[in-house]
Length: 196
Image (cartoon, rainbow, N blue to C red; front, side, top):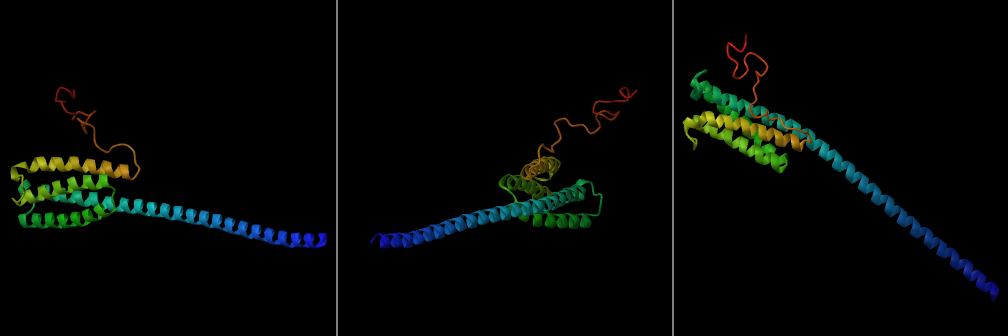
């Protein structure tokens, strides 16, 4: 009988060893599969973030460029000195308005909330400027110069929100009292006697 017990034990131990081997393979495969899936997911997420960041840069460039064109067109229109014929000015403003609001919708789709909020203020100030030129604005034509100033401030807020979202540090806003002619004879407060 002892021989039979040894044979039974040997047969059982080979099944046990096979079972442990199979369990180990399954656990190892599951771990390797999980790690592979996680690495692939992280790589996909990184690629998506990179793609989104790159596309945001292009979209933000178009947004800021079209906004500036709308501001320039509004300031050059017939309500601001008639530097070009009224019909041409209106057509230029309308074209710039359409171009700007096409990109504005895209910004709302791809931007983080701080950029969306800043772009909204910027956009609606530009819209008020355009409507004011047509005597349809809620502030009236007498406030157009002030609205144009506020558009510029909104541009700086929008640029700063975009810079933060893109991971850039610092503000693009000029400091209070900024004088582009500081250090020259045209500096604020520099008169004829100051330049001598």
